[in-house]
Length: 167
Image 1 (cartoon, rainbow, N blue to C red):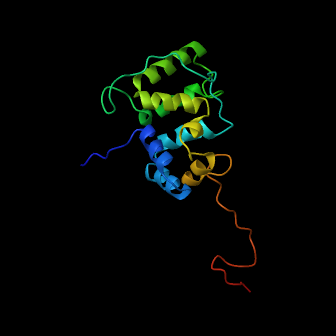
Image 2 (image 1 turned 90 degrees about the vertical axis):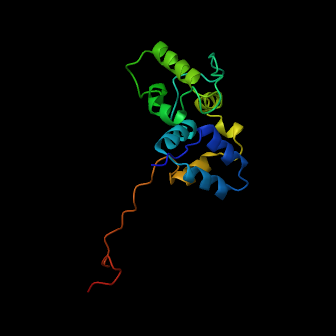
């Protein structure tokens, strides 16, 4: 079986940044759509999601390893992000969450660590021009609340499912 190459989130967002049109940006996000990318971008853009850390710089040691070598990837690490969202993990102590966050940042490629800090600060759109809440919502079919809208409920009328008038 051929292994498919999964670009780093930072590489995907670089492509979005370089795309000239909104449609192209949406297309790139759709092409690289994974549950992890959706979860990451939701945490970065959804205004109802608050991180348990203050905004700003994080004192960690960047991972100097070149891309594709000794580092973890956000694609795998996003499943741990819930620990860092207010109200999601009420068991782990704040100090432990900070330690986990530092370990995550230090394990990631430097580009993805910076990406994660920008997401925490809700500033991805300042780094990746054209990456906006609107683009993210359109790419993933989300409504204003960053959720998949409920299917339309068809009112029971005098027509059958075929559209023919019953009589």
